[in-house]
Length: 274
Image (cartoon, rainbow, N blue to C red; front, top):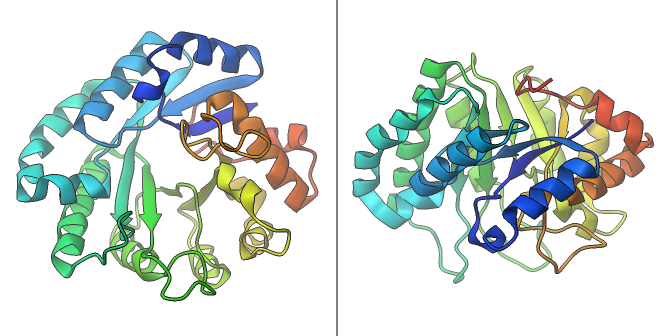
């Protein structure tokens, strides 16, 4: 049973054919979709979409860049954010976390990091109150040298330091890209799970991410598209959609030497979607 555990079907890229995209996914073997909130507006849209479709569920969350964009004013939105939580289709808080990558190439400041950390912690407190799992967004800063790993470890270590203060919560590392030594630290804890997206199909066969996937027990792995972003090979360069989650499952199956049809029955179901 294929579940796309991380989609953004509320994105404007789907405005022209959203219903058709959803129908195509369900008719082709996708059984469940979780639409992810990444701001106040997208969280509202995610709830509305989940309430419209039986087999779509949702999360609500404020992406770390939300706090950088709105600064201190962003904390005034927390009450509005919490008001969304009455929907029974909400299965997680997320995507929340830390993101130290800035697209214009500039370096993130300590003040910006502090804003993200404060917003992240507030949302973890809310997840604890609701007893919901948390979908983590974590992206490190740009590597110092082109030969370095694809992103620095800074955000990963900071996220781990914060989530370690919430041992009773379950965490899903969305589109996981941590290094092998960092992954080994996470595997010591029972409450951490890992979701992989289409970007794993971009790597060469000797990439470290495949050693990471081999190391993680299959019962701790989930699949996602992060659509409309990160379309997997052979759809790279096109708009991503939930149907393409099958290519992520195929790649993980290839790496772990498990038939993808069997793999889909073995992966984690942290969100209890059935």
